Image (tube, rainbow, N blue to C red):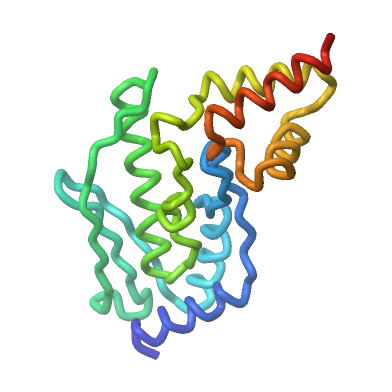
Length: 190
């Protein structure tokens, strides 16, 4: 079996594995695959089929080589352009580690055709009616959760209240909706 057939077989086996997403973007409200969700299964499948992945990082590109272990001269190369990441409160080496982890994740997802809902699609078009200026800040959300907690409701209950009342996720609330929720919780805690 050549390297392309092995990779095609690996993709099918991985899709049959019914992977579970463990990553959660709390702010945008979506789940995603982390490396640990699929890498152990990929390694198991690769071993079974006789292929190996090797990732390297250069100044311009991250490169994944998928190599046929029985015929090492047969390989498939995938490239992804390197980009900078500046994480708040992190040292340069931590930023580099974040970049490399993201690159590995995206290279594996591309090579093995791991499919997720498009995160841009999930967050596009959900802007409040008043535009970005009418959107609540992270600090306001924290205040709302704190008021809800003082009134006897946990994080998930507050999110459910907002959704039930306004049919939007908390991140998509308008400032007017935010004010209504906060006023309601303030009245309850008295």
